[in-house]
Length: 147
Ligand SMILES: [Zn+2]
Image (cartoon, rainbow, N blue to C red; front, side):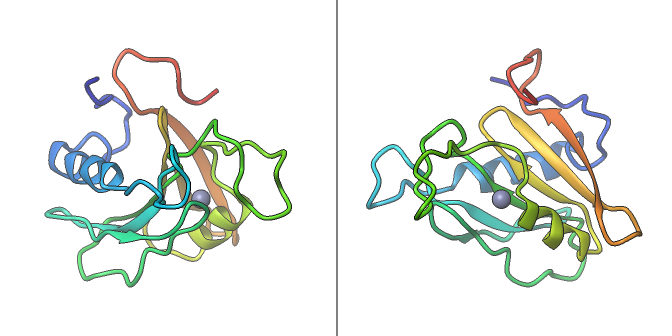
């Protein structure tokens, strides 16, 4: 499926940045203990590359922002699968950013993206301690994201 390159977001519509972001997200490894699940990955992307830091099925940390980085990202590729969070067995993973994702994004100087199977969420600091959240379709000519 081709990427949706008409989001109106300057990072997602930049061919190099977008390809690097997609490659970074797609590098999320299969979780060794949970067949069918993938570990999250997180990092920062500049205009030339992205850093990639694997986490586990529930969380990931982007590491340090580098000079020239224009965005932060992490993945929610387990969206739709039953939660593996201890004590939250009835929860189903979602693409949407969590409360913690938003709190972390509010502190970053660059926009933070959450890449799910069908959606890419952007959280941008609103200057008042919170974020403005916007969802984009990940794939071209698709409406399967942002449900
Ligand atoms: Zn998250």
